[in-house]
Picture 1 (spheres, rainbow, N blue to C red):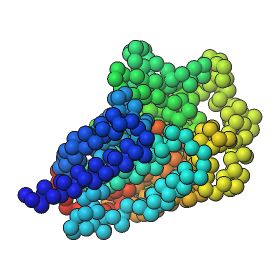
Picture 2 (tube, rainbow, N blue to C red; picture 1 turned 90 degrees about the horizontal axis):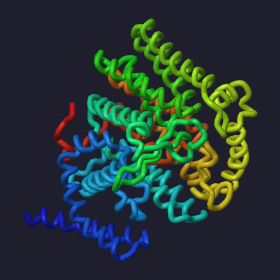
Picture 3 (cartoon, rainbow, N blue to C red; picture 1 turned 180 degrees about the vertical axis):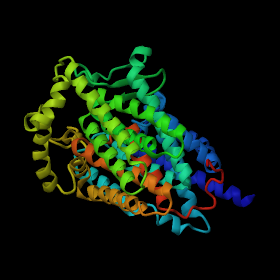
Picture 4 (cartoon, helix red, strand yellow; picture 1 turned 120 degrees about the horizontal axis):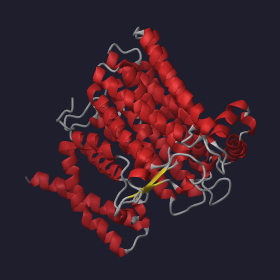
Length: 482
């Protein structure tokens, strides 16, 4: 009993030190600092609760991964742009990290499976760039979102996902939650006009978007410039499920999700998302036909159906869309393929690429998140993931990010040679997601909001966890969701 009391006391002391440090770093007032410190016992209880019942809590919390924190909590500098799901993942991360570091037995085999070195390089690059570049109060929150949140999310997922069934469950929960979000984007402004309306950025564009403000909650903004890239990941996963999921019920549900996600991508006029879907679904289908020796006619029919629906619906909307102040849908679609060099958006992107690449080489430590093309401007404007990272986090951060995804690619390609058909099935989904990242990342920064981080990183880590088996600590969550 005394030993447990000492352990709990040491955790409390560490959390008080952490809370005081955060309060000082954030330069907040005494009232907010006191709020942090008084909340620590609650956090401790929450950590212990997650350690005991974490699998079900975190897996099913994916159903609300896009829900912002209450407005009161979002007013704290350290929690800017924080979502409830990120808050839960952060607590779980510190709980598991504390146990792994101070466990008497140690879990070296488990720790060596997670890509710590690439993530360390990635985060170090972000910190170095922050120290040498133009600073704004928002930068620590953006670094937390782009660097620390993926680390915490991946760490928690690789702890909790211990079987193929659990990986599939996580993907299903992610798909169901995203389908709910998609339906809100599609019909929310009609059904709930008081709290949901089009995003102001999209005014006059004729593109699908959403801004949701629930009473007492933070603001959820779905930007048309990025929604297509992210929902391409979801359509890729649902297509793979529709193509070769072992149960007919699963294939039927996945087919409806393909329709929902495809509609969002097209109505958002996400050209990169459409291209990513075409390539990723083609890769998955070709692999299944050649390697899995499944029904070639059935798979070709399914791929043809998806391509006909996506391309056909896109062309239909392009011919009937009304003009807007940014050009109508037909100009965005037909102009890109008929004469990409004169397309307005491509010309805009190439202009910044020509400026950005020399700038990234001239500033190998980075110009910061708000340092391009001049101080105070959002570097995201370059609309290219690798260029955005090299400018924001320098060559150090970019190297770490590339190493992370090379590690994913290595594991997924190796997974295609596994004996288990389930591991091969998940591996090709992982490769399809990497295709989406490459195609989408060529034209945009891909990840900028909390919900986007979850959509991009979660499936990759869920698949990574079971394709690359880990030595799971005995103390981690004994209840199973199989």
